[in-house]
Amino acid sequence: KIYNAVSDLPSLSYDFVIVGGGTAGSVVANRLTENPDFSVLVLEAGVTNEGVVDSEAPFFVVDMLANPIWSYNYLSTPQAGLNGRVVPYARARILGGCSSHNGMYYTRGTREDYDRYAALTGDQGWSWDHLLPYFFKNERWTAPADGHDTQGQFDPHVHSTRGLTSVSLTGFSYSASARVIQTTAELQDEFPFNLDMNSGTPLGVGWLQETIGGGERSSAATAYLAPQFQQRPNLHILLNAQVSRLVADTGNDGVAFHSVEFSQDQFVASRKEIILSAGVIGTPQILQASGVGNKTDLQALGLHTLLDLPSVGRNASDHPVLSVTWAVNSTDTLDEVRQNATRLAAAVVEWDATKTGPVTAIGVTHVGWNRINDDLLIQFGDGAAGPATPHVELMFTAGSFGGLMPGHFFSIGTAVVAPLSRGSVMLNRTHPLTGPPLIDPGLLSNEFDVVALREGIKMARQFVTAKVWEGYILNEADSFVNATTDAELDAAVRAIAGTSSHLVGTAGMSARDAAYGVVDPDLLVKGARGLRIIDASVLPIVPAAHTQAATYVIAERGADLVKAAWA
Ligand SMILES: Cc1cc2nc3c(=O)[nH]c(=O)nc-3n(C[C@H](O)[C@H](O)[C@H](O)COP(=O)(O)OP(=O)(O)OC[C@H]3O[C@@H](n4cnc5c(N)ncnc54)[C@H](O)[C@@H]3O)c2cc1C
Image 1 (cartoon, rainbow, N blue to C red):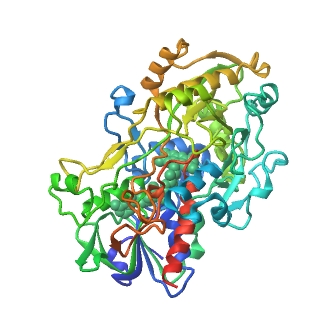
Image 2: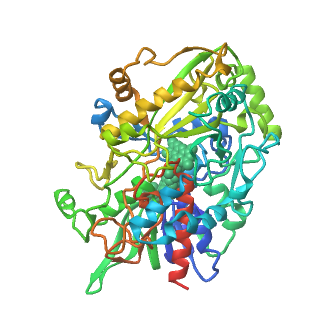
Image 3: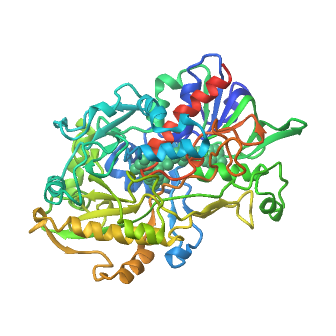
């Protein structure tokens, strides 16, 4: 059941208290309440996702992101790698968390990404082979909204129809889409076709899979907290509940967490575990506010240290991104739907009536994954998990970003998906317990990331040299159109790059005996009892993928680890 006031809660003591009803928290809440003997309370800072049309309608994702009601509206600290610029850091504050407002890309990453997690933690349970059943437990492969023939657009062998999150190919394509596929034939050495980028080996260009079903977003809230699950008598979800800190006792056998403070002096007790699922920013913020973190940092803030864990908030990694944009000789683009009021109104009417048409889609139909050349890797290092892991992602869009630029465009978003830069999320120095945290993703602080993004621009430009673009592409229409030398491109990269919002790692998992890291391979906080972290913050290195699929499998396996511990 969902509650809006603490006074309505049936109890102030539960077996499990989950902090954050976001992507991971919703999964854990669902899986734990499969056992009728467990009682679960979810404390979610945000509001309900129900009835939020901008969340439901894929086309309106940009509007969703712009609305402060559903977001924490964070800003980064000034980024030295970005010429001192401050960049927005969107984070959802709504049931379902970022899965309720993200771009819906469903990309798992590479086999090597997960095998690297297994090697780092000394736990084969985090390897690709062991996690594949959890990907399947999460995913429900679904027909696209337009019912088009999907043969040759994905590999059914690497998908599941039994999970809860709907995943589908795009339900609406613009004419640029066919040109992207034609390019994989014309430039097959540089951009080979890949039937399914979610097979563990994504290199090449293929059809984008998205967390969309029946023309609507499939989020952790719509899937894992659907009405039939909300009705479970052992599941309780309190909205508008901003957790400030966790409370522990310290004794001879360590620090034992047993209750949670939220919404100004309210407390709720956990009988078995507190599970932190507040995300890559909320989780380290709550840990530090509770006295779990680097002792020197906490002392400097005037906070008592319960547990000296220097890795809390550190080692954050993210994907820097920018977009290369061309004006096109066509009105069949996302921009047309966005900017032509009559067209947009018709699209909304169609979506309302049948859940079909442009509103079912984000305008990106294909994605490419590519490596930069070995000479550069020797010179600048290599952030990839292995030789089958990409450095650069290319996102092919039939329009400008969000369709917001006046005119008609084709664009290729370019991101570094194997970054070497690292950053942190630390408490605010002047208002540690009440101010927004200091989010320093360290974007482009490592030269490798600048070089990889520069190479990404070159790849994007090369892509549109295929014959099929002749007569369609008119001219490059971005701010760095005249940048051609490496030095000019590097300057452009630093001047315009931003974040993909894929920050992870602020409560990273490591091997049981490692002196660094925040959680052990079972996701238990090192040195503590009664406290586990299950969200994107435990990923020690960002995968070469948009991060929701990785978050879903962390959550699915994490829930099984909890169940096993209390069986
Ligand atoms: C703008 C944007 C676009 C993205 N696009 C994509 C994409 O297209 N594909 C993809 O794969 N990934 C995407 N991602 C990344 C992906 O969505 C996230 O990595 C993933 O959802 C993180 O899940 P999480 O459970 O760790 O955190 P979240 O989903 O953020 O959940 C954390 C929850 O905790 C709550 N919370 C936080 N602090 C507190 C507190 N103090 N008290 C109580 N509750 C609290 C929040 O309200 C939230 O509901 C995107 C992310 C963003 C921000």
